[in-house]
Length: 216
Image (cartoon, rainbow, N blue to C red):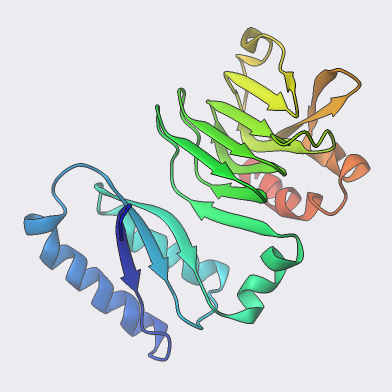
């Protein structure tokens, strides 16, 4: 890959065997190839669709490799892609670090954190299942009905369409409580994630279960 490493996983073999072989190869190669600066990783599953438990197991294999950061998990499986295609949702994994900018033309769901100095921008909604500590810009093409949501909501700046958030000190203290931002009139408001269904009911499914898990 031009922007990192691409891992192609066998899609017909037993998944446990695939994980075992992958873990062995990563450990074998770590000393010679993966002991340097962080590299983005894209994982191609072929036509395999993962359960939540399988995806977590896959992430745990890479968690032991500090220099490998999962940026995206791809699949050609219609069952896995159906939900994202229905909403034109782009799902990406990893951490947006200081100085990095992620830009998308469709709704984006980030499975990871946005660190201070990092920017995530979308013409649609910005959804973060992780900590939002950097800058998020939803509706960057001018759509006013877009939202920004995150598991931990401590951004340095929020932007929706052409409007910019209140000063960051207003939300500088936060617990792990999922929140979202939306535009009403000329002002950006912040609310608890369980109120999301009143504004964007089709999005609440992504966050309510995650919120229950995070607060449990």
